[in-house]
Image 1 (spheres, rainbow, N blue to C red):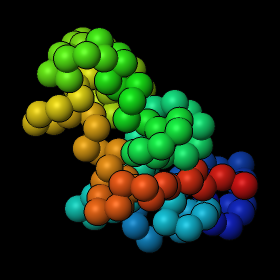
Image 2: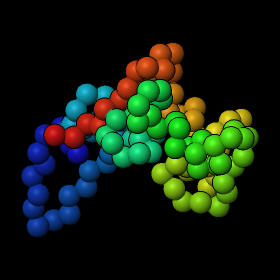
Image 3: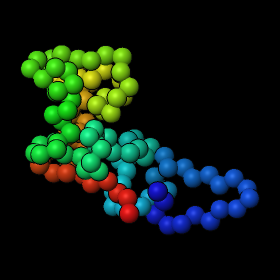
Length: 120
């Protein structure tokens, strides 16, 4: 969502949300990945808040999806909100896991931080 209203007309209106110069609604609503703006990943349970620890965290559903008791298990060839990094594999530990991006989204060094969805 843009930070301010955009006037529409009969001609096509283009808004480039990838461009860091495009102001968006909210506070820190996007992440800058090497000059390209992207949405924050990790709200796997769709409760509008990314949480790494605590009640309704977004990390535990990933562990449950892979079987719960063996954290090295994976689930492959899926299109799922639990596949946080969108590589087709739900993975809890190891390289390219889906748990680490959640921690990065909440700030990395303080796992109790949260990131709230930026919508009115």
